[in-house]
Amino acid sequence: MEIKPDTPNTLKENIRAMRILCIALITGVIIFTVIMTVLVAINGPAFDPGSIHSYEQLIIGGMALVAIISFGFAITGYNKKINVLKQSGDTLNDRLNVYRGILIKYMAATEMPALMSVIAYFLSGLTLLIGITVLSLLAMVWKAPFGRRWVTEMGADWQDEEKMKS
Image (cartoon, rainbow, N blue to C red; front, side, top):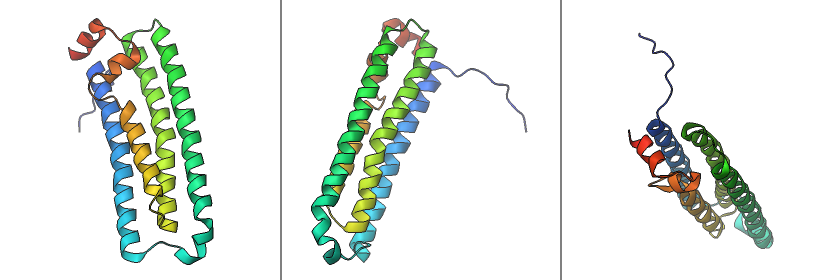
């Protein structure tokens, strides 16, 4: 087996890797949601619905609060770091590496309430919790680097975009 020497990734490969990461995270949430929904449809929720009836509002409210806090941290952290990134005079490759870190933190903060709400749905059977998962998925897709999003988010210009194509 031949071992390749470490070669620096091209800009195109970096963008592709970020897109694959986002697709994997989004697909993982969707698959987990489908599996849990099928399990609840077949077997019912893990807890007896009658025993948690008095806690329904608390469960939904708690999950909504967790989602709001998580989205708040994700959006404010993302916007602050993107503004700093746009002002930096770093090379395109350095900005892309910083952007990857910012994107990973954003995706993690928006994925967490999605997974928690699916688990809470599995335990309680409260269908309204799937709405939190859908909102989380929309937030993940909103910032995913599909199309030209990475260009506008990083403050790249047309020259940077041409470098990426070559």
